[in-house]
Length: 427
Image 1 (cartoon, rainbow, N blue to C red):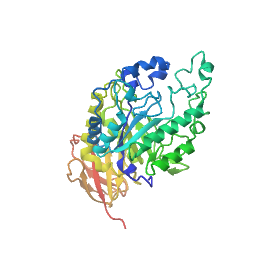
Image 2 (cartoon, rainbow, N blue to C red):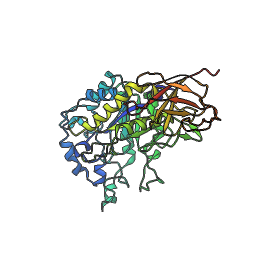
Image 3 (cartoon, helix red, strand yellow):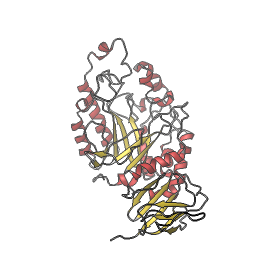
Image 4 (cartoon, one colour):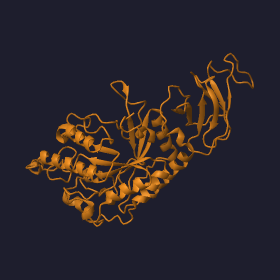
């Protein structure tokens, strides 16, 4: 648990929002990098950024109704564009056709819906004149890289970086979460040349400033120094995440379709039941899920994203008590199931619906009552004689200590059925 922010592991589910000048490009948030655009070429999106359908209240309502408890918005992504009215640059939303501070509307809307407020801030900046070209930069393959880097000064950029973070943490009241992204100093797993990390960001001083300005804030681990949590991206950990052999707070950041920013032609959307299984799987291993949406160039949520959020919300309205404040159990679930536990309540999430019975090892004599969580209907409990041999119409016994729960033949009409077990006091 994060001692100064116990809410984080209680919340379990948050909304990530990637939105900026890459939205009207509609072909991935790294479009500037992928297509090796110059600042001048990319500026066409700055001149035509007109999000007339942007309504942060719509985003906030969709997040709350999906069961999300916090949100994180890209205040600045790698392209350097700022959604707020930064005093340190002209490359900001008020100077586009949007004509205003878009970040403030997000902050106010999230607070009005009872969600905690987070900012994403990219440590990279492909627009800033002092950020040196490296192996991640859009101009990495330019014939005149040395000429482009002549006169650039990372010390000046570092001052800018720290100044912008100070702006974000002093202009909008309490900020609950700061998601930095990302460090790639040499050596790094992707072999980018000219990589940058804690030295270039002066990470220790940056984190100290953040702690001073916002003592209760949650900070991730991407400054190349330890933060409050670790952040696996686009994969599900095989078990609880460990640092030096000890479990740590973690959060998986995941996309709906493999792209973070709006990607018009990417139709590889995960089905709702898979998204819910990912959430459950993470909570069963002690983690949160930060699920991303990428609003369009006009500022509204893609209908495919709203459908996904609505589907998650439909499930969460019936099953959220197996998620909020829940975490791993020491008990071992049967195949095709995940356990989460909150106090004396054990939740059995059935990824596959068995025929008539589910057998739970080690729970014999330990359960007082069981019910389907979706409708609160009682489930019958039994323990069979381990020595019972299977006959024509009588199933064989289960290993000693196994609890058998009788299920209806018809699977509940929910994305992932959940059994709620009330454990006996073992004191």
